[in-house]
Amino acid sequence: YFYSSSFARACQTADACIQGLQSKENKKKLSKLNLEVMEEEIGVEDGIMERYFGRLDGKALMTYAYVWPVDMIDNTHTAFDVESVSEVATRVGEAIRRIDACHNGEVVVLTSHADTLQITQLYAANFPNVGAFSQYRFTNGEVRSMKRTP
Image (cartoon, one colour):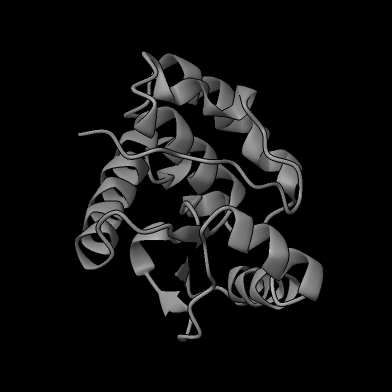
């Protein structure tokens, strides 16, 4: 099952992943892992939306560098009216619990945005300072696994 934020580029990424998994070679690999791609629509989940950057939204990417160092010191800050790291972690945690309730025990793929996914990985790993997420960058199209724990 694939879930995406409603932003076009995240939906396009989910669709490209599904298409890529349809090749004969990839279907064999999935079969060996006892996995299959469900032919359902991509679920749209607002809880995995891109982080809101307040007054910096729509500005050059380099302006986000004003926020990331502060995140490392205080994950509840809202300087420049940004959504705090803590708020993102709470929002995504709630979304994952909703998704998991529908697909308990099944493989789910989330396609979202850099900050959101990086915050998610540290939050899910119980990392002591989720605000340090900017030190754990994804590359474009990178896939990382998260495991369920009881």
